[in-house]
Image (cartoon, rainbow, N blue to C red; front, side, top):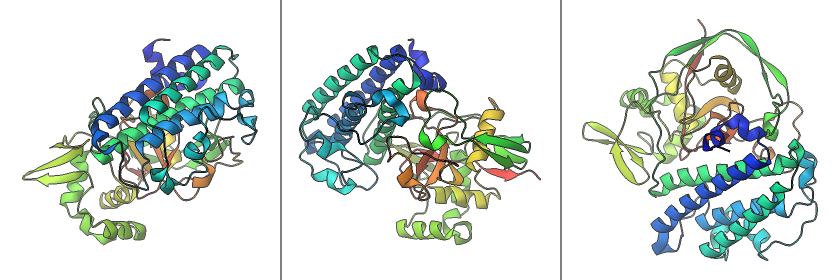
Length: 405
């Protein structure tokens, strides 16, 4: 498998055993490289970080990635059944006796993860190495049927998601990471989209997350959508026009969030003389106005849209534009807030990893696209990300939309 094949999202979702082996190795390489950056930065404090409801301790993150793969592959007696597997099927004991009590995110409350007596980094790396060897051995003996490959694909994407979390957590903690930076896009232009019936929730073959399934048609009126996310140049115009001090631009929830944080501009931005600067992994640098605006909450995105006389697209509008407009519709440098609450599609049925979607329905906002920190094989137009509207540590921005006049 060539490295460029690893970057194709459609290929990754239908990849057979040989390609999945390469992708799992690639995911683990990124996991360990980024964890090494944490070790260098946090050596003096023994890898400890302040408590936050938005991030996990680095040691816990490392152990959880390995535990998750072992739980759903090496220790899962029903791994061949795919989405029909019983998630509560009895499993053999883990390699490390207390692993389930430490790393099962469904049963270990977030706030307690800072006080767990976790193994050291070297021991966890050893566990991950043994677990990956077990997974690859299983994969070599596994026929290439979608059901039988389901949990291998799930574990691949789960590790990719946690790696992205490690990247934005590094941004939050001021830890230097090389090679992770967005790129500028072409000047934003309006794209006119005709009225249509858009079909979401269709099984496209291979792997799909449970919240992506449930065929249904959405009637869309003709609309105009930005060809790319809002840039810093555009967002700074809103800031300098006093957008953060104009309550009429903010929802009631947004006003409460703004007052609680006392913000006058985005969290990772500051004015330095006549220039604006952005903090990137602990260093303040002059802002490139061509880059997509990011680290913005949904509240900030909505306030900008009201100021500009526009609105956020619904996720159906975003998905339809991404699939119908072709190359002029640029995405993949920042996650994009939509106007849609994260909700199940009709007929939703939870997959065996029960806590992936269902606990978060109706309490989070849907984002679409991907960010510069997303592994390319995760950048799928049907993928639904979801975060609370107040989160501004994620590499999230937005584009604007309006009904056709």
